[in-house]
Image (cartoon, rainbow, N blue to C red; front, top):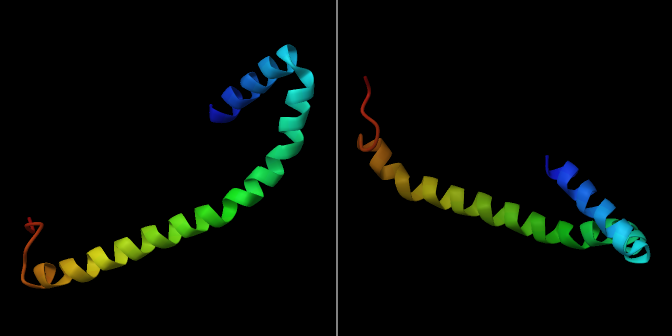
Length: 70
């Protein structure tokens, strides 16, 4: 659905201003390459926060806090 929306927006841009649409089409791989390190940093911080949460919640889980077994 996201890809279909992007294609529709690009087609609309192509009809309104085709040089800008062609420039956007050619520039998109470079924008993706520039955003890749930021995505990797985001994944790293997400994993770090999940690890810290698991470490801080470990004593409570060991003492029986949290979910009740059925």
